[in-house]
Length: 466
Image (tube, rainbow, N blue to C red; front, side, top):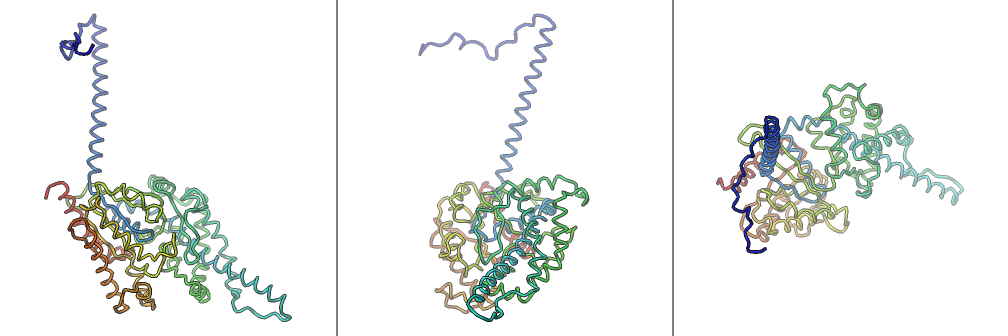
């Protein structure tokens, strides 16, 4: 009843060990106590491991933000290359099918463009033959040489299907829509598909012979090697270049471009270089946590950094907020070369305008008020190519009244980003801007070295050491 104290409340604790009835009982008791201690020690060990894991997760956390195709994954690979070179190198062989898929998708994109033109030309010629007594040559028809390319490079379609299925499990990609000005990308969901393939490759012997390789992989590599000469001829053909220019297609400015390296990467024993891996393109759906064990010297050696790469397309941005807690630094990727491009999800929205809008939201977010903001004005190389080719920045950014040169444009953009931060930040803080070309690993290593000091200082402040 309430208020009554149980008679067992005054019993001593722990209770005394009852006397053993005999030697067998004593042996059984000691055995049971030993087993109980073993279980207790196992639990203590598991708890200790959990605490150690938690301690590691309390290491430096970096959040990569920016719209799709802003260069987040490329910057991530630069961090991995700089701080975990051995682990990065161990994954080299697993990146080969990704790079091969980038190449064959570029080739098949060109073939599709030529095939569509040939089909259109045939339809036009048939219609013309019905309406005219005399057949005239069609100035838009593709040459016999290009028709031969279509025939000789047809096997690359089966290579594309094979590699796509191997990396992501199917050959249909409903997430990414067709873009007539861009070679198609393949999409993987975070922590699935090709990630498992990478683990398999990492666990296999580094001296695997071609005979021990998967038969389909050998076949794909043989087809690529056999088609290499024709791929080079296709890409360098003046007629192909004219056709791509008419279609306003610039494959060399797109992520995952390897047509200029065809001879090297189609060799049967090709092993990707660090620069190849950084340039490789793969569209990821969903957030990913990347653990980067610091292999280089210094006080951080042996520790682990956590970098969170979240999707940048409009449909994925709602998930960003769940990563705002407990991060030390946000690296915001701003693709400044996209001033003349529009969102894949909405062709009425300029990509640079969208980036500025995202930056404003990040700067004004109160959950990130205590977080360091590092700004990468990325894809400087592509911006320079566009301006040198005659593109007008002011045509798309009507508020811009300065000279149409890279130095003036980047100074203007830097001022705009800084002003947006100043006007929207919940509390006074510095931002750390950098002009970057993420596929330039040497230049990016210098930038990351500067960024590292900012990150470490912020981590020390968070732990009250400073």
